[in-house]
Image (cartoon, rainbow, N blue to C red; front, side, top):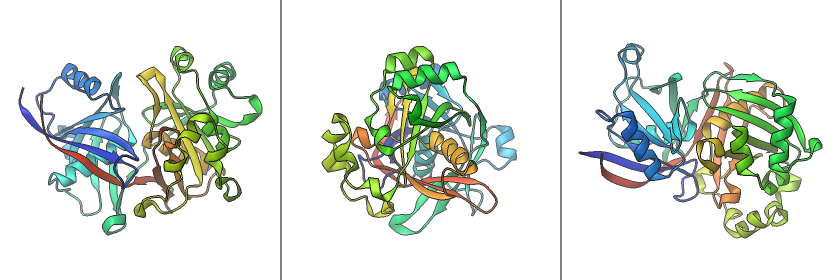
Length: 317
């Protein structure tokens, strides 16, 4: 065992405690898979990452570092909030990108570009959403998942299987309040082997008092969740998102970059959402995650958010 630089970063917030934390081991050299997985189970966070030198192939393409991403239940080929949080930690630790325009991260899905947006306290990092494959879900599986979520058929407006490394069953629901009221049967979702992302388009007329009218769990958190957003995330959200991932040991993820990336690519392409918006996630977990989405003129979708280091030091591994 040797001491290694370590940070724990809260992502998709600029106020500690309101986003999604990721544990970042900034030097993962020499660690085997079992050690990485054991540490990820020990942190008990949705993701733990290990920063490594690029592979020879990655280096040839200009990669600045390589990232391995673990949940308590296994390794992921890509994940959004660990990408932003690890890049934030790498830069804070003194990392210098080869390009002035972006940081280039190597991971199992390939190379991911990360850019800085804004200035000063409002600065955010944003990653280029990886290519998305999407297909229609099996009607049988869709019906089983809907029952596990307690949804009526008419509450599901559209559904797609979304694959940008992680695979999610994405459901567009009829109302943000429907999203907030869900009380899933996590054991059933685990048995079905389905990670599910749900989203609803918010409208100004339903935002006022939304939490107060939602279910018991959301009402318990209403005073804090309805507090003013941090300065860097002052734009009112226009989508409400929740992510259920029982098959990988996470009942509900607070704020999920990979899911928001695939939702954005689907919803914008099919005309359900505008080319720029802010999504709220984590409301029912007493979080106030804000995910900034932009599709640029070239059709590339960028997923951005603030990040703040909460713990910094060394870890023995």
